[in-house]
Image (cartoon, rainbow, N blue to C red; front, side, top):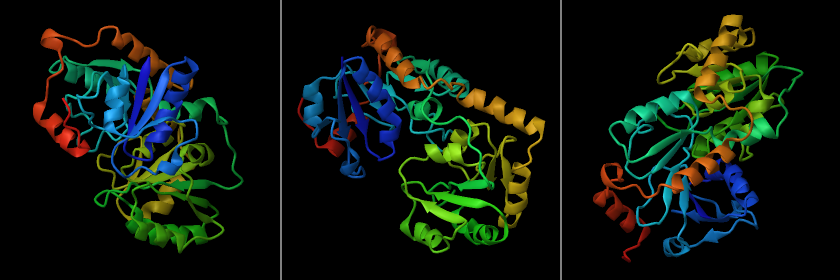
Length: 340
C-alpha cells in the first residue's frame, strides 16, 4: 500500500511518527507532504521521504492519506483518515463534520460516542476507536513510574490569547518558585507568542526552568502535577493518573482542580499533592473514557482500521461522501492546484 502523511504544523511529527513506523514495519510505501510554511523542514529525519508539491502527491496515488489537521482536498486520491491533533473537544470545531474524511480514528469512548452520533446524520464516514498514536511511546517506551526528590510541577498553558493562563499566573508562579519546595518545568505550546516565552525565561531560577524540547511526553512522566488552563495537554497528563490544576478552564470538570484567581494557585497545588481516594478514582474513570489504551499499540490499530476500510472504499449511493465543491475549490486555490 501507498500512504501519505499530510502535515501543516510541527506537532504533527510526534503524532504521526508512531504510525509511520508501523507502516514501514509492514513494508508499505510512506511519504510525507507539508502544506503551508509553518513546518520546520529541519525536523525531518534523513529516512523520511517527502513529496514536494501537491502534484507529486496526486501522482503518488496514495491508498490512504492521514491527517491530524481539519481539512484535506478531495482531489488527492485515497481514503482520508482523521487521527486528530489532540483532545481539545471543548474548542470550537472539534466535532464539526467538514465532509473531508472517510475514517475517524478516535481516542476513546467519549469521542467514539460523539462521532457515532454524528454519523447518524453523516453516513459517509466510519468511526473506529483506536487510541491516539502520539501516546504510544508514552506507554510503550518510557518508564511507567518516576519518583522526584521534591514535587515537580509542569506548567503547560495553551497559546490561545482568550484561553491562556500564562500572563495571569506568571507573578504567582515566580513567587511560589521562590517560596515553596517545588520544582517548576514550563512547557509552552509551539504557537505561544515570543514575548510570553521570554517573560518566563526572565524569571528562570534553580527551581524554575523553561523546557525547549519539542516533545512534552517525557514531562508527562516526570512531573507530579500539571498546571494549565484549557490545553489539550490536560487530558494527556490525566492519562498518567495524575492531578491537574486549571485556571479558568473553559468548561471545568470535577476531575480538575479549577481555580479562578491566581492567588488560589498555591493551595490548589497543595490539594493536588494530597488527593483523596475519591479524587484518584475520578481521574482513573476520566482516563478510561478519554483514552483507555495503555498498550502502546494505537498506531497499529489505526493501520489495521485503515486497511479494513480500504476494502470498501470508495462508498457509493446514499453513503457516498458529499462532493463539497466550494470547500474543494478553496483548497485548490490555497494549494495552487487546478489540474483536472
